[in-house]
Length: 395
Image 1 (spheres, rainbow, N blue to C red):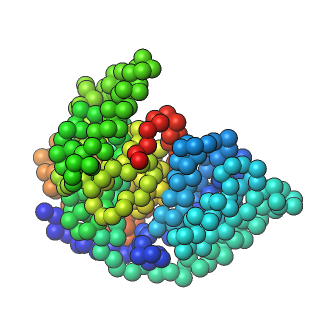
Image 2: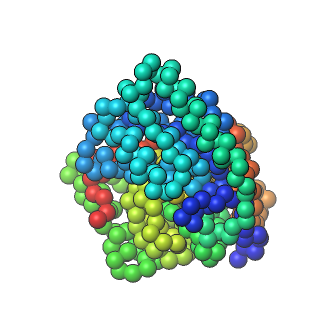
Image 3: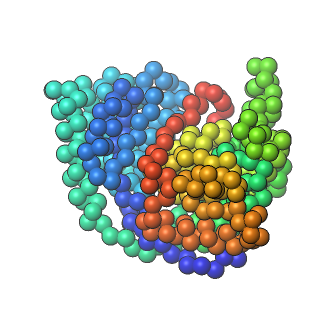
């Protein structure tokens, strides 16, 4: 069992939430105002722009999915205040997003470009003025000590190789067990990478209903793709995974699921849906790194660990992403992107527990304000999963 410090310094939010960052989020309700949102964010210190190619002409589950994701990003505890910018004729309106984000009791403002006399230049000036006022208020906040029951950890992997499953991924599993033991929450996404190991996850389910929630989406995925003449099992591992030494989807899935540790599974949530209580949760999400981390941040994760055997630069504008790598070559060639070098498990006979202690300290320092490599390099990637691709949300 890891025995290091069990406190971090965070920002108190309403409704018993705690942030580890104190950012101002500028959110586009529709792709038409992405440029405007980026210009507003550039004029406000410690702000992030949330842009995307969606927001208009959507309907049904697909529209609800995008709404939930953008609202979740705005309500994430790492965000102090939000400005929602719309165009004015889209079906995902700025007013709708702002109204739902306000339920988190944080400062929220919104406006539409079509309602601004003078167009974008005036809209940008208006947004910057609002944002700088929020920033002034945010700077008055001080970090305070909190225990890890307030933390939600996202469990991501990408650019995997054959080494990940025996180095960095089991290291994260140790951290998951510790977070849950301290009363916190963890979320494992990438349900397409549970294939072949679902029976192992089902054994850890809290009850039979949760076990069924794990089994059914995978069966539906395989059945639906078979109807289209596609055997999804033949699409994984990806070409990069294969080049990295992975041979089967089961091998890849074993590496993915070991990040969830050994604790019981509380339940399964839809993409970007917040867990209903503390503990370990699984998220329905197809495995794209950026879509996955967007969903984790929208579900309330304040911090994300990403294991990457072949190396990846990706990050998230809301939740800091800590990168671990077990490949000696990738750690050397791409060290500017790697926060924790787990390759010493191979090169210097370090133990899984040794690197877990290193990662735990990195998590504490990141929670206390240390910038991750992705943050230092300004990798603020957003992509929202289009739910029409897999039309079977949980009920």
